[in-house]
Length: 95
Image (cartoon, rainbow, N blue to C red; front, side, top):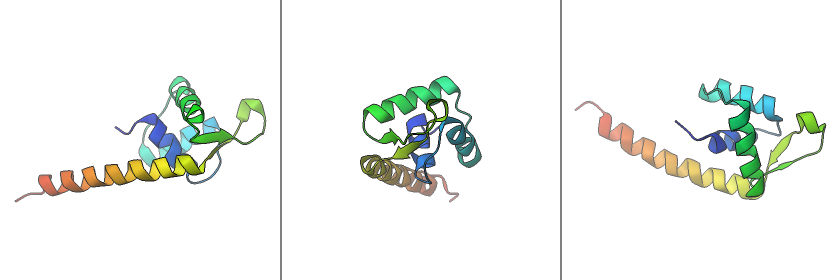
């Protein structure tokens, strides 16, 4: 399973979203339902690391935006995952 922070960053790569919009987007593209505690805990850690930032709005429906640093981190993580997927698929192909 992909870790929640990576799912959140991937969701925000498509544009600014508030928590509920991220939850539904992640469930749509990854088939993973993040609970509020998991989602908001990961959002807090991503914000502390400078990977995302709030962009105003109502504090109860605050949208977040992927930062340039967050985009670089996401790209690096996805490249690493891509390599693992390529190797795994190659090794599990029928002979």
